[in-house]
Image (cartoon, rainbow over the protein chains, first blue to last red):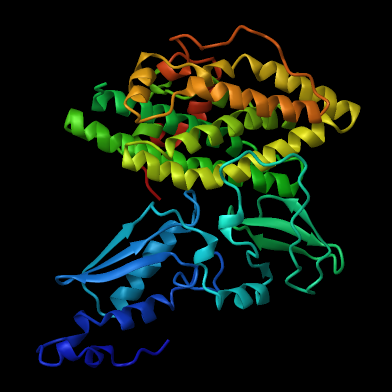
Amino acid sequence: MNRPNIGSANPAEQDVPGPVSTAPNLAAVWEALAAVPDPEVPVVSVVELGLIRHVAWEDRELVVHLTTTYSGCPAAEMIRKLIYEQLAALGVAHVKLVTKLAPAWSTDWIAPEAKPKLRAYGIAPPHLTAARIDVTGISPLRRGNVSVPCPLCGSSRTSLLSQFGSTACKAQYRCDSCLEPFDYFKPH
Amino acid sequence: MPYDDAELFEYLLRLGDTNVVMAQRLGEWIGHGPILEEDIALANVGLDLLGQGRLWLRYAGEIEARFRGTGRTEDELAFLRDGSGFRNLLLAEQPNGDFAQTMARQFYFDVWHLLLLRALCCSVDQRIAEIAAKAVKEATYHVERSTGWVLRLGDGTDESHTRMQRAVEGLWMYTGEMFAADPLEQELAAAQVIADVRLLREPWLATIRNVLDEATLTLPHGEWMQGAGTRGGKQGVHTEHLGHLLTEMQFLQRAYPGAVW
């Protein structure tokens, strides 16, 4: 992705001599981070997934707060690496990448514009808000499958194959109309 | 009531080791699951537990550094301790057996785990509360899945029913330890750092009874419990199975110390 001349985008840096790109403004940083794909679902970025919680300059160090989807997410290390690389390419010399536990990541933080991208990629986006998922009680017995529309043909005749799909954050469904299996990003 | 860092460290090992050992057991299924979807699901549940276990062990290492001067990393704790140094529940180290046995073990554990994590969300120790708040969301899906399998296998064919009944009975004597609070846990619970596990037995039993009823299975009635006193997995006294599990889990770091990717 071509970057605009971000050094000059920050008026405060206009009179700083030398390499102006060492402290790009925050808008440029967010824009750069928005180009970092999620390694498991490369059609959406780490920003769209709600993984970047905070970005700020502290003196000459760029502090980025990152959260993970699930605590065992195997992509977490890769995401850190991609972020470091992206910020280095932007000319940021000092980055402090902090992984935050709280508040725990929720699918409610996925940006609305990410949902059609997920669907086009063959993944049904979460269609319930996480707040409606009861995490305080033991789930009711034999509860009916929630109806998840097929991302491929749009049919609502689908059935759950397994609570866990290709990654922990997804479940596996099968469409009973077009018969294709698909992943469902679980409300979390 | 006062407690010290050494006690907190000890308790964090109980949480972390139980997760890591359980994850290792689930990982043993990879490539051997009854169907592809379940193979993947077993690995994913294991991955969640491993991730949580790493968070607990990392925190344990930080606490250790506070009272001992140096603390071990999560990897050193997982790969360089001998069996007697592990503090996991006996239930976690029990062999996979058949798929019914794995799911019965998971079901007993998941229901307890969810109740425990819900309680730990209220810990006065902020880090414990934060890890629990993240883990509780994952544990909710685990309970759904293992409950579903107990129902399907219990209320399934004669063969699956027989196997599931045998599994819930065979593992029953390892469930008491989950609700046994030794002086260390009593002290930490009194300080509101952890939950009093004795209070979790009743809601746990109510759920287990409901699900087994619905699954046409008989609730085991054995009173005697393995490790429920002060000599069980949580105190480092294990069944023969842990050592075998560790030989595989720790092999690489023992044979090639310090090996990295």
